[in-house]
Length: 432
Ligand SMILES: C[S@@+](CC[C@H](N)C(=O)[O-])C[C@H]1O[C@@H](n2cnc3c(N)ncnc32)[C@H](O)[C@@H]1O
Image 1: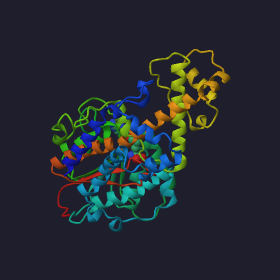
Image 2: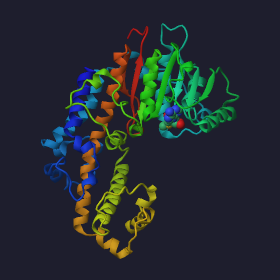
Image 3: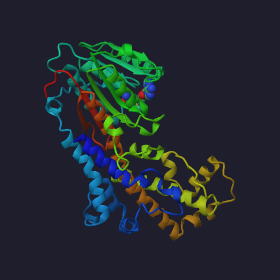
Image 4: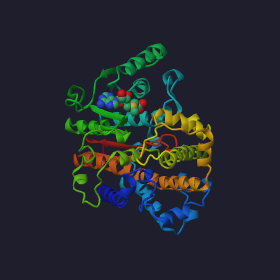
């Protein structure tokens, strides 16, 4: 069943390969046939509020019956099918997990998003480490553990011993001193927490850290790291793995995108040749938290696209230029200020003044073209989740091929933490 879903996701991505493998604005002044006129005509008259309903809330009523609507249903449906391919085992049900109340001292430096993630992941790690039938809990090895938020909660509240591994020793020192300062006098028992420092994945596994008692965890281990930790876990026959990936575009090297035999056996119409654009797309948040955040995204896009048009039409820059990011408040200010700042940053010589810039962007045809680019980008954005599901299914299948029981499930509210799909793999004596 999981292979079927991988194949279906692969077919969707292949059908729309032109969309996922390039940015909308690259072909400007053309917008390719991959975004059919029919789709654009359907969406162009819609207000931001209506676009939010379609793309932010998956409410497709206003475009029901259209071809685009069937595509969006098909793409969104792949995520829904994950839960039938990987039904949630009972022991993972929320009611069966231990959810202690953490003290404020234990949450020093933890923002709202991280708090949400930790309160979901830590009880899950405890359940997997302690499950019935195991005389001693598994020891957690948290790869890319950073400042050690997860390690801190696991050792203080969940009765789990942790080694927190990261290449950034300064983060680890900060985490260790936070514990000393805030939790030194904490009452009750605390399991050992060790800090290991190094680059995971280069020059072989850190074998000495892996054993048949290890529960390997990677919470938002970016780029190669999440694939590398899964491979190392399998090579060293660890009994359990929890992996949440992120920043897929930080993959380096080739061959890391297909860990499974199943993935490698895909036909050419289901296999994806990944590039930086499709990987970046798979890392994009697929659910803005609110209409206000959605409108902010649209505003950022409109500034960027207007600048692209200005470069093309006023400054004769016919080749695509990456205009880069600026701090959010710059998108709230006047467009000409943003433009002058970006042109200076990009070291592009020009004689443009405020009036000329304003006159250019206030033209109706500029507004229309920018809106069209934004609409195509919204459609492209919907394929990001399909791309992410495809990447994760391959990893899940690899683990299944290696004899693990696997489940892939949303661990976080996607509006709070959009990289929310976790792979939970275990072998041994769990009976469910
Ligand atoms: C996105 S952060 C996640 C931190 C933490 N797990 C969390 O969720 O708060 C990724 C962490 O992985 C670490 N990292 C990335 N690649 C690494 C590697 N190859 N070896 C060790 N650590 C690595 C980074 O230093 C960073 O702390």
